[in-house]
Picture (cartoon, rainbow, N blue to C red):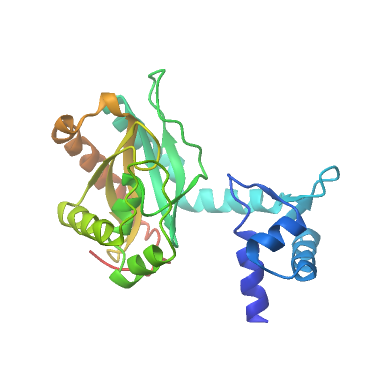
Length: 259
């Protein structure tokens, strides 16, 4: 029964912002699972409101029940009331967009955004998932994971998102050690072409890595020479958010590692 539950949850995790709908056969192929097993799992989720089937395409999509759960999680985190104003102030100070990325297993999830008023900006949507090995917002979290967890992520394979994505395991591990030693990460074009990102880690009350705070935008607006000027502003905002997380015991379900 636990194996069935595990398979069911793995199928559910395939429904992402990038791939919001799946047919039974294509999901069976994706997960390398029997077609009838996948059908039964999807039908069960549908009967409980977790999935719905499009009457025209016959593909399955996330159901309305997740909207309810999303509101529950949002209220619990209370990000909009306390964290967003801090992020908005940082965005106005730096004139770049600010992102809060949450650690979720082997991925990062964008949970809050404060966009810059500038016309040209880096656009990311809430709910976007990213790998942990490319881009400052994710790598600054991966740097604080246990060595075995980092190795596990790397051993699953590294995908090139741009020509600057680090694909050599030894080079990536060395880079993560440097990030951890500095306490921040700066990258250009590792996950998205011509985009810079400057990120710092955020921890819970147990000093476990749970999130990152990042400013990002077009690379021409933030050459590495400007980082020393902007970094203190980012760190100051992160300290305020860190205090909030510690006060309300945020993210204690993460059990990876302390600083």
